[in-house]
Image 1 (cartoon, rainbow, N blue to C red):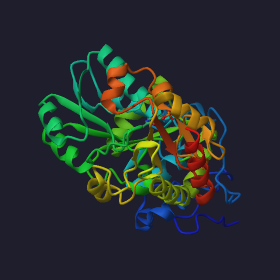
Image 2: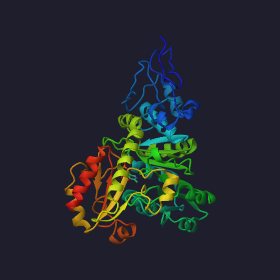
Image 3: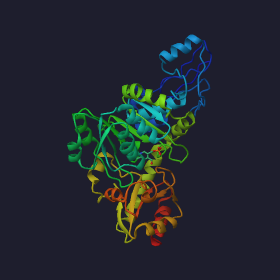
Image 4: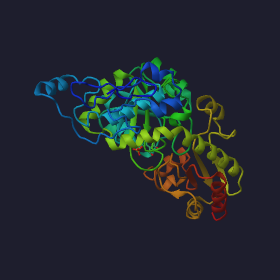
Length: 423
Ligand SMILES: Cc1ncc(COP(=O)(O)O)c(C=O)c1O
């Protein structure tokens, strides 16, 4: 019986001799490349079994059965496309997620990981050796900073930190032995913007690999690879899931880097994504664009409503014309994204009064979610930092990060303004 395959991409391949499931590898093929990103996010990478399921199948299996001992031996020597061995090495549902996000980002390949931090630490550790030099922006999420400052240095990697917004500092820190540069394109939580094209140009002159944590910028507003990055990382826990269900991450880059550098490291150290998580993330990708646009629209409205508010020292939102890097944001993202930070007059006590008065949003520490999430970085995500570093990074006692959700705009604005009255 002829089987229905992908409606646009290549059809499902059927092994007539085996008589059952042989999925078609529908990765970043020529067909996918002609689709626009919103179409790729829904369809790219789809594999269908003989049942022609609409929603992607979850292959919740740790391993795969071989027809013979010879086949097992051959697969361990070299696994072909759609030949799987063990879930830590790869899995059909995970492969669908990897191919879909690679197509969305215009990357040659991707490796899905158990969390965003497995992606950050995996990408860096897989490529670096004792004696290598790394230049990193200092404004980083607490765990990213820990990996750079505490872990890599423990294994003999020399790390220089710079103000990521200052191209002169990048230029001065780069050396002939610099192997990698690392930065968050939009930093957590103070929303500093790093010039991806500018830093990439400087880094490539010394042959360094540019690794960008693009979580805050999102795949919708930022295509870091097109702007010069070599490796792009997402915590899929954030906008890609976007509904607070699962931890996950992904590393994107060239086929050579992903399959020859990242895959051997990840598959032997155990940071791979589970098939169930990959399925959650595939479903998340389908609605990513809609959610991120709605969140950005709400974030813009909220930032505008809060600008100049008497209870605030400042509103930090890259989409506001008074953001000090507004021109760069426009060039790099075109939009201000889904997160804003506000610095409440009266420090920690006022910030806590504000948070405790919130009704629509929730106090938590994730971001990129359909629900508005409010975080006090100084006492949670960045608590570990000494006070002088917090001050240097602008993480003041009154700072509250607001990851804006998809709720009704007027409910959200009203709630935040009411809570500010109580701050
Ligand atoms: C910028 C950034 N990178 C990486 C991560 C880590 O992601 P995960 O929590 O999925 O490990 C986070 C999490 O908050 C983050 O904000």
